[in-house]
Image (cartoon, rainbow, N blue to C red; front, top):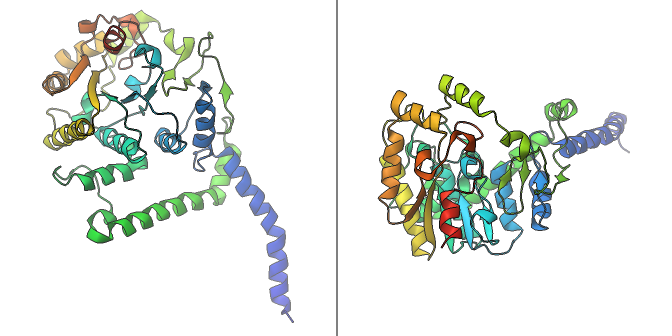
Length: 370
């Protein structure tokens, strides 16, 4: 016979269990921090059907993993860059077999990780365009979002022992385990999944979900990108379409704002190109070329007022050093950080660092007029 205290405890547990399950279910449904992965799966499903989807906050790097695992059609051209390259779309390369794999705040670590993902999923295209931002060579870039997709980076580094060890990042324990690396890597992946799942079970996360003011992560609105919309869209080719609200910028006001306070995004304390990042980038290009991939480098321009201020007033001439370095590589470089070189004016920008999708883009000039 079961003792009375045990029966009482079991009875209380049965009373509490439905409440706990309901709380966890609500946390997963709202998912304010996008931990469950439902966001990326649902977005992938819609994009693979050819839809453009209104998006808000989601993990762009996790989405890319989910998207590739869904086995889309093979691409001819893939672009890897930051938000400064996100508006490049299939029309601008005159090829419907194009995918924009750019992620916000992309750093050198992201370039490598995304390339490795393409290799691991056997999706290396005929051509890769690297949207190269100058901060990729800045050890003080301050970007850490690559860490949410770090395993492919370390996989690539293991395959390329000739690349000097990066002093700016912490290597995982499993990286140094020799023949035990596969076991350590699997355990680390399992641990990360357990940590993420445990967050969904916490009362604190339920409270965040309860107080969340936005729309739940799984509610997407399909919008025709050709319509006069005012929202942030992710198109089926991976590119971003910011709509008329974002693109309708007061030119004079923007110039005044930049002149007063230019956005030196990730360029602070940047005086010289880091030699380790240079070695890593050169090895990455060689790796792609060895695999038969044609590599292009795209240099997205800065707003004219911002570029003038960066180079002449803030003495960030290292930007021109990065451009010179890119032009000296054995690849075709498209565009320039200097907006005047490709006919950009102040009206062609959303803000100090993000160009609009204009028809005189160097990428469009090359791919559509070839």
